[in-house]
Image 1 (cartoon, rainbow, N blue to C red):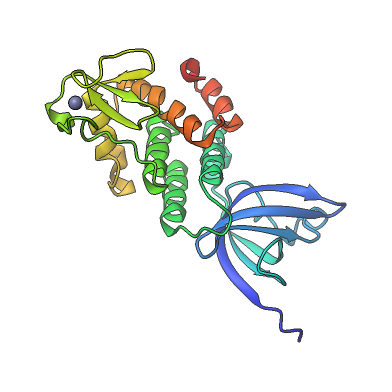
Image 2 (image 1 turned 90 degrees about the vertical axis):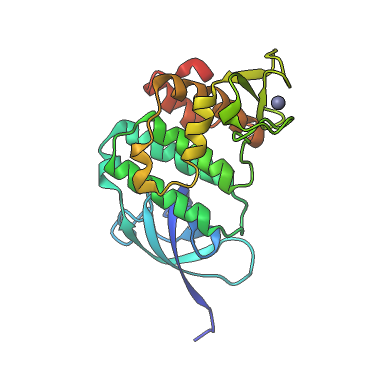
Amino acid sequence: MTGKMQNKATGFVLNFRDYGESDRIVTFFTDQTGKLKGIAKGARRSQKRFANAIEPFSLSAIIFSRRRAEGLCLIEDCRVLNHFPRIREDLEKTLMASYFIDLADSFTEEGAVSHRLFKHMSDFLNLLEAEKAGESIMRLFEFRLLCISGYEPTLGHCISCRKPVESLKEISFGISDGGIKCEKCAPLTAGRISISPGTARTLVAGKNMPVEKLRRLIFTEYSLRESRLFLVPLIRHITGRQLKSLNVLMEVKHLTDTI
Ligand SMILES: [Zn+2]
């Protein structure tokens, strides 16, 4: 024995690329070690060895080893725990799941462990497996991801006078200040996005709700549009770019007013 340490982890496949003639480089988001990047030797040649385990958003049980603390690890074995068959047979669901993992990827640094983010991904992929690919799932995924990652938009009160949203009639959202203001504190001018207090309240209600209860949260078409019009630019502002998987998904869902 060489004394090489074998480690175990459970993780979602964020992305992979072919490497050389027969290998693949895979990035997982794991519960135990956060983002984990490794080389799966022979993954291109032997489909059987890593069957279904190295596909986007699959949940896999991984055995890996590493010689150094940093850099690529060696994926020794990888077995699929959940392949999400109902997502994969539906184009819209597949695009939405791809957007979720791209978004999770952009909000995580290598080596940062987040059990909350792992649970968030698990919750929403399971929800998508069971439910229709409605836009509310997408907006709640974005909103809750922002909250988990430390970028929670302030929607419960005016960030200037602190009046609760329940007492306000007209509010607007500012991308650069990350919160709502009432009409007295900020007249609606260029750069502020008009949203209704009802939309803000619906999102806040969905922040900590157990995922199995989220289907009871009713978003009107109007609320979905308002949520889209501030969440998408806010995420673009934070990450500095717009994800391709979002553009494709929005086109398929005919929601191109924000892109
Ligand atoms: Zn105010």
